[in-house]
Amino acid sequence: MSSAISADNSDIYVLEKSIDVLTVAKNFRSDKVVPASRNGNLTVIRRVENQDPRWWPQGVAIQVLSVNGREERPVKTVYVAKKWFNRGASEGDVARLVNPQDIQNQVISSLTPVVPECQVEVTETIIPQLPSEPNRPSNRDSYTTLASLVTRTSSQRSCANALRNWYRDNSMWKDISRKDRAKIIVNKAQVISNKIRLDGLVDSCARASGKDALIIRSFMEQQLNDDEVSRIDYSNYETNCRKFLDQNGGGNLDSAYFRKRVNDPKSIHPQFDASLAVCIIKRETSSTNFDPHSLNYSFCQVSGRQGRPRSTAHGLGQFTRTTFLSLRDSGQLPLSSVPASGNRTQNTRIFKEMSTDPDMQVESIFYYINYLLKAPSSARIRRMHDQVYNDRMEDWEKAVISYDQDRASAYIQGVHSCRRCYQAAGNDVEAQAKCLTE
Image (cartoon, rainbow, N blue to C red; front, side, top):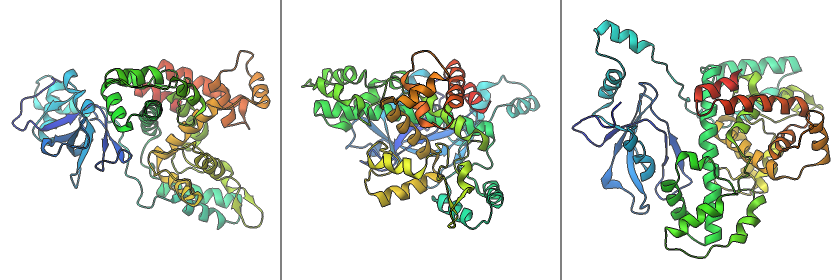
């Protein structure tokens, strides 16, 4: 497709690379991802220059008219960094068009030769349709519903049957194939991984330099491309921060602070990688087809006369209530999708809401893995590793074994195999998703 297609209405664009937008003015925690167009299912945005934010010099105002071919109602004004709005134009990734119907027609004509009408129709039908995630259920807490369902059953078998029936009728991903679920997960993993990396850099740079975090974030979003963002970790925090100071009037930088931050919850370990979360998700939930609602296999194993579930693990991350709450209370899980809170009652609510929020589940597993990467290696973990390998144990291997100590040997072998496949896939989402499903 050409970089620009002539049109009278020059403020209409078709988006071919996903962007992060702020949904609430002046609130940099209230954001969401607007997905890119998918082979004819187009995301259409309108540039609204007269509403550009004065409170964000590096931002612009836009309206999302349609997402993956579905019309957005109501149309609201949101805000995006100039870098992300403009990044496609220079490479031909953003095209100016008139309206959604014309967009569909022009995309088809730009991808296929001019042939008789009947042949055009045949060509159009073979364009692959990539998955779009369904809306979240209106009731965000399905965990309570499922826990109540478990306590009402009289045996482990009837409990398993009840859960199976519930998943079949109510799961938010029940109409999405296993392959499409895998594509959604690998996309989420990359987006969330990059966001966590950038958050860690901005937080460290702001503390070490005394500069405003919003200004630092805007600079980093403008200066760092996707490849550079994917390589951010605490080993290059200082380099990137000095680059910011050099181009923004200079200032003092506390170099010792970066060394102190090595074990901080928000600092990112050099071996942190999106494939770690994806491959752990495969190990945990492959048998349940990566369902965000899925409960741990032992959920139906009653304990005592109360019939309470023995395990509270659920979703893509398979987090138990105890693990989640302890990490939240100690500041290890600053979920960007919810307000920061040290209140245990609030944390309990957030844990339950994870049952209908795949983003929270994936983000939680990332923070937990990053924490385990920096945790000291216990003698027990080293012995379990030595049962499988005789080579020097890396930090990511210690983290994986710590994540699931019950089946350490089989677990680490499976993650090794998955990561080799994932890394060989490069940036090909189709190939990455295949590693997850096989």
